[in-house]
Length: 79
Image 1 (tube, rainbow, N blue to C red):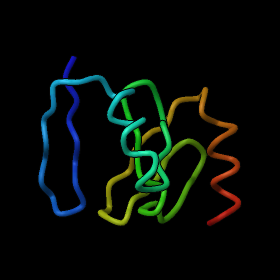
Image 2 (image 1 turned 90 degrees about the vertical axis):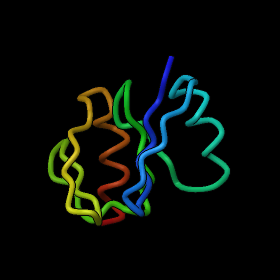
Image 3 (image 1 turned 90 degrees about the horizontal axis):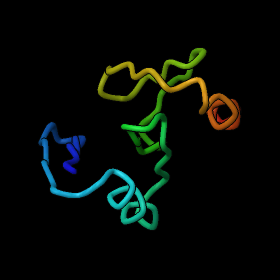
Image 4 (image 1 turned 30 degrees about the horizontal axis):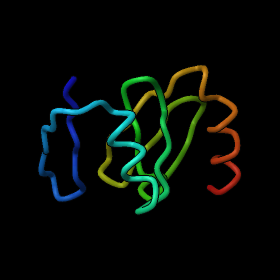
């Protein structure tokens, strides 16, 4: 299993491990959330949430899974 990690500097890191292991390792260092099976993001970089679309400071829009709707509703209260 391989995981791509995109840094806010624009750098991309490719590691030979699962997203779950990466996610678990990052949890103590930030406000990370899983937005679907294959993606996790740092909630500190979210600028807006519309439905299940998450807008990041970089200008990217990322679609979250329908299963994460409850988590997104909690986050939306912060924006």
